[in-house]
Length: 186
Image (tube, rainbow, N blue to C red; front, side, top):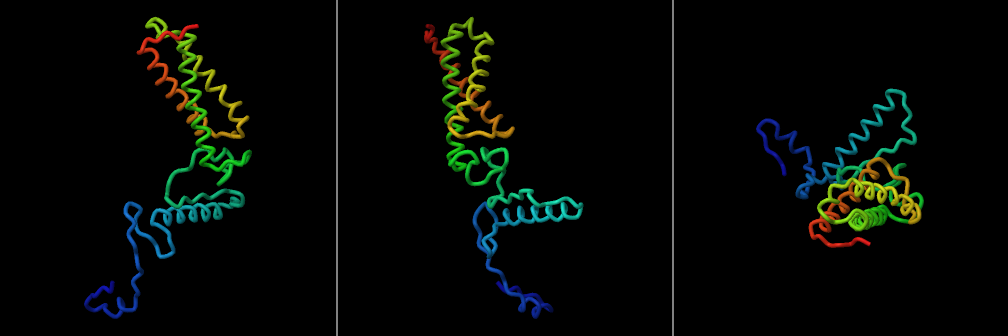
């Protein structure tokens, strides 16, 4: 689009308009394929590298991550920040996340069933803290399973995710068993 402005027409005619496509919520697309979000991320990474260079710190070996969508860091990429493939297995990041989520869900459901069997499902046993110890044992017991499957090297965020997901499914399954009043005792 050529903009007309009185008195400055010559300047505006020399400038060529850059074609810009709109992509919905992601902002404008640069002709080089960068969205406005990824251009901002790239600029921030460049500024961080420049700041580190001015202070005399070495930027060599420091990972600079620029996400194309401007999203947050990904879960289950390993504590060392491996990209694409897991360090200790041939699993991609997606497959690694699916494996960890599946094991957490199954461990949470199993912890709920074991809590119902070991502690009981009557109203008096619902107040027992022994069920929480069963949950803790199942959270800890997952880590050797992760090592056996070939998924390991978790960061703090990953450990919190594992504990939260196991707790959530334990809580749901144990609550369903408590409210339904089934007898699972041995």
